[in-house]
Length: 467
Image 1 (cartoon, rainbow, N blue to C red):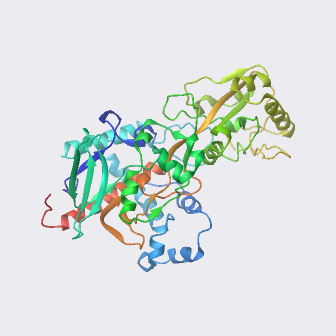
Image 2: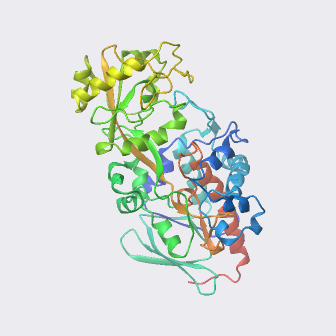
């Protein structure tokens, strides 16, 4: 658009709820200021690049990209080309976003303890997408709401792509496009795909906000149907701990490092406090998904009030369960009273004397308990007792299609598919533990890169295509 290309946006949602997941999030950027990413940025993305990667792949990835064999270019790992481009272009992308009137600041977060700096657009993701949409509409972009792409094919002359969609009244519409950008999110709103890739426990999860329900994975499937290489971990997702009772978007419950997490049997199943909560909540939430009925409960007592401003870590609008006895709190939760009583007794006995430092990793750990609790371990014996139910919410899925540093979708032989681009959740990047505050950032960075590359491609494709 800024480069002169004619742009049509297909948006599945209603106009009132446009913007996918970004609309509902704070849209944190893992940056220490508006020009520099965090010091650990590239290290963490590489560390979380997947399990047991073939050393042959790693060795080739250390050489210049043009020398990589096809199977390495098509490999699903977040390769050094993608990571370094994301790191280098984050600052320029923020400056570009600021040109639309978007302001960034290091505002307070809901994390009581955090390992990473976070920058965010003032007003969160909604402010981000509203500013971009306003500019787009002012400069001639057409946005078609309640319109879903259903078919994507390549023209035989490799001079474009054919897009077919269902319009807002159910009619079939189609376009011949010189370039297509897939930015339609993951598949967190598609129970069939969730179960296909994650198994039967997928039935216990739900999107963290309404925007996720619009992300049904067609964009990923359409690209795979054209031969795109898959990337990212299709069997996993970025999880957040939600109160299942709440209708609020991102109804987070993040105070579990100061209590114990138990399942329906009243048993602990994980280390609630391995370190700063912004590092650990993702995999702890996925552990919750694997418990009976996909639910857990954080149990804590009156001592929680020793944690300054602890309620900022709880974003549900529902009150905690409360009772004057352990048996009573178990009954309020509907879990095993005998199981919880034994769990709390064993936990209390494993707590040690030491200095409790609620806002810093204090290494106040249990002794002789399995699983251990590594920090902030104090007996739960001062009534009244409280509890919140927690389920795993899916913020976004990890699996998508492979892109190169220009945001071009590559096929299973590592070759760019002419005219096809992807950004955001649709472009697979993550494995294992999510590197916090990088998702909206990567969408912005590769959306900008891909848009510029596509506009340049279109400018070179003369004469104009005709429908």
